[in-house]
Image (cartoon, rainbow, N blue to C red):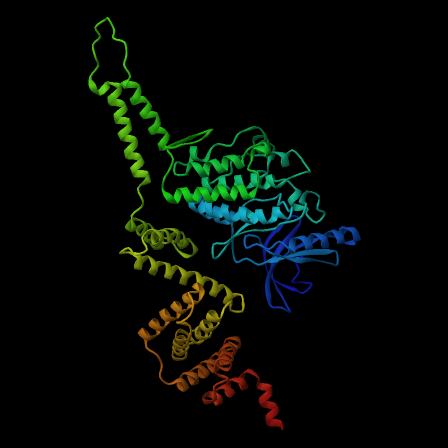
Length: 546
């Protein structure tokens, strides 16, 4: 497809990916100044068909109504000059495919979290009879804040005239296709997506899909004829419950898979709950989990059996040593099981939970540090008045600040409007700090803290207030300029020097910053006018001519 820089109301800023059927671009809606992702495709024949155009209109009507935080939102589609496009929400982050390429495999806790979010998005789509049919790691996006979003949902993909590339089977796609889909069935149900989720979960846990091969044919044969290995048979630390979920998702017969996304969601939530309770099973089998209590029942039966009266033998038999006798072995087994039960069911200590959280925070960066949050929250639930409660709350406060700062930097990077009053006030102060006027920034941060300190327990507001307090401490530690006039004068001189060096764009940034930051302050009016004159020299010339 010929590269273009503009399509309809969109100006393209860069390519995000490409397929044989089209390309995906990061784009700006020129009128709205809104960042979006545009999937552009050629439609030389279909675009002339009124029936095909109406089909696209109906499809876009369905997709734009799918609203869920785990789905990449669709904003509609356009046909123009033998080309078409579908417009999606722009998600800053990376694909699951890229993440796995970098990390090989993920911790089972992260897999459970990601799978829970994927199934939540699928549940929304399936409720509107939309089946993805092409779900694989490249279609799963991980946003900067850790939110997982399913991308590229389409309606009846197998028969959709606008979906060309996804109907072409490749080795990569074959690794995630359900047996009935590979057999060519045209009546694909939501259980096709559940099988694909099982393949994705397997890969996240193990580091590879359940079936691999050098050819499409080899992979297809495995999907249709071979049972996938159990994850807990490969990965010792994988909980049995989670391995059971993956195994059921990978059943060959759709009827043997979970009934729907809601059932998988429930199973995953139970998996996480049981794992966090730290009451792990002893073993498992085809009929469910064998728990400690059942082992105790069997042992008690064994003890009763040893105490029943038996007929005396007429022959003299030499008795084995006591440590080989049944009653001693049974008692030893009972004590062993009791010890294991006590260890498994013993609640985690306050210090242990905090220690796990701190280890994650100190060893991870960015969004990965969020893995510490469940341990801190569990600590506060179990020990709300414990000696280490203040430390846990302090770490949670830092995690909230990190999260708020990631979202703030994202909004600044893509020129998005602040999402709250707290973010707006923080940005006003932050702009002064970035410009170099620490005194003005200090005043703004202090004002923000005074205005927002008292109020409800809104997490976003508190996070930005704490960020402001941290910046106040940093500015005060560095010291601040006392004479604002001298500071602005020095910035004007810097701009003049940049301009004389031919760096006109850099100079204009300084002049524009002075106008925007100090334009409403009368005491700096003269300096602001000098900056405006340098920004718009034609205005000065006109005034001189008159």
